[in-house]
Structure formats: structure tokens, C-alpha cells
Image 1 (tube, one colour):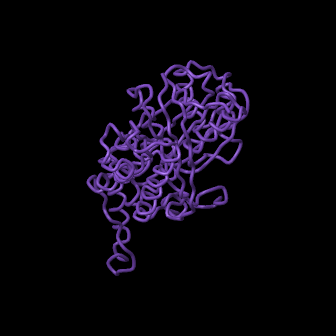
Image 2 (cartoon, one colour):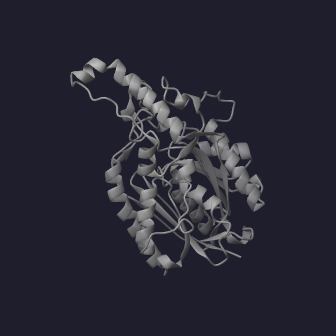
Image 3 (cartoon, rainbow, N blue to C red):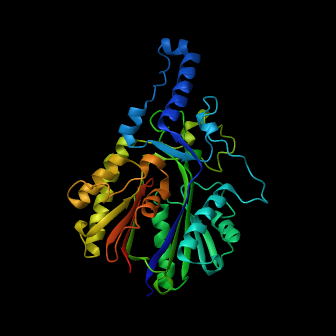
Length: 373
């Protein structure tokens, strides 16, 4: 069996960022207008007023301070409260494919690889902008890659599931070089009029090049083991899809957008993921103290703090479990890859780390890696 490694990663960040202060001002203006328009019904006790948000509430609940988005003006307009991304004609590259291509080009350049060297492309993300043709095939065409391509969606765990799929292709000999991309326009499925979740998501694109070890450049990452887990839950859900042809837009149909039972998610996902990591460590003959760094899913700072403490037996410091959540917010599948991309250059040969994701499904994935010389 061939040995699969991570040769390189790539990252593309949108130019527009929204601070908590800007987001709160927009939401509170919308909520005040909503309450004013329904003042009589609220006074009569027929409906509840919309609560106000605050920077303090957001940072305490999540650790998020800002987020990058594809469209800022629509999100911050109290009369719109949603991103406005123009639709492109079919003869132009789609928005998500363009994002993925930008991240992919960086990954290829860092590995010294040409697009035609790639045998397969996997586009793994929470929300695809269309059902078909596959985003991955469009990325394949735009880059000029050979072989085959397909899309996959396992919500926030899409990247780790994608890494295992890519590694399995390499291990089996089906491909020698696999490009896995994660374009995430998470702002598109977020209800910006929901005070409990209007701050959660951001947009970004990442890429991971998984290859046979004999091809890999110096300083690659040997994949020691991958493991996936799913367990059905309605506590994180998005019902919007191609069957909702006549569904009204976001503020009129919040049930069709992202919803979650945050406390239930926290209570159920933390122990599930911590146990999964610990068990996978044992299967590899390792323990928490053998890990130099953990690149955890960037969804909630409190969840990461608790998961890392269960794995290490103590609270991890910023060096052991770095965060990008404060500036990127939750970017779904891309979060752990951003953390890995930005916080892995200082790892020495022989040191080990963990890329871990978890989210809707529930789904979770662990990818243990070791830095090569």
C-alpha cells in the first residue's frame, strides 16, 4: 500500500471583513425597525420583540471578533440583511469555483506542482451553489487538471472527510496526486436576523494537496491515520435546497436557513469528539502528550478549549491549539485547514499534530500527521 502525505495547503481570503461592532449595529437597527413596525402586537402580547445583540454577547458566546465575507454591503444593510452576490452566466466561472481555484493555485505553487500533475480533484464544502455539474469538475477544467473530479458534502467535516478520501485514492493507487478544495460561502446560508446565530459564519476557500510520498516535496506531512464518524442529529440543520423553488428569501423563511440548538450541540459534540480523538490516538499507539499541536475545527472557542483539555488532561495554550476563529469566524469545513495553513511552519521534523473537524450531521473527522524532514 502506498503512503499518503499532505504536500501543501492553500488559502484564499475575501477582501471584505465585518467587525462585531459593524454587525451588531446592523442587526440592532433591523431589530429596532422590526419591533417598531409591530409595536401594537408586541404591546398586546401577541408576539415577542426581537432582542438586541451586543459585541460582548458575541465574544462571550463564541470568541469571534470579525469575519470575512464575499459581500459586505448586503449583510450590513438593515433592509436586506443578506449577501448580494450577482449571478454569473454559464459561460463564466462560478463564484465558488473561482474561490477554490485561487486557493488551489497557492497549494500547487507551494508544492512545486503543475495542474496537469494532479490526478483528481475533490470539492468538499458545506454548501454548493448548484447541484450539477459538480463544482470540482469546473475547478478541474479551470486549472487544467487531468483524471476525475467530484463534490462531497459532510458539512463542517467536509475537509477531513475529503482528506481521507484523497488519502484512500493514493493508498490504493487510484491516484498519485489529489487536490482537495473547500470553497465556503457560509454567509449565504446564515440568517442575519437571528440574534443567536447572526455572528457565526464567514467566507473563505482552502486547498489541500494529498500525494504519494515519493512525489512529495521536502517538509511534507505524513498522514499517520484518518478516522471518520457520523451520528444523526437535527440540532444543526439547513433545509434550503433545490426543492425550495418558491421559498422566499432569508428574512421571510428563517427555517430554511441555518439553525442550531447551540447548548445541545455543545453538550453532545464535545464528549463525542474528545472520545474519538482519544480512541484514535490509542489505535495509533499515541497519547495526547505526543501531540505538538492540534488544529481544531474553528466553530466555538469554548468547545475547542474543552475538547483540548480532555485530550491533553489540561487546558491547551494558544501554541498547542491555535485559533483563527477571532478573525475568520466559523468557516465550516475550511476552519481547521486555515489553522493548519497559518500555524504549521514552525513544526519540526518528527513532531506530530492533529487536524480535526466536527459539525452538523453530527460528523467528525481526525487526521493525525507527522512533519517529515
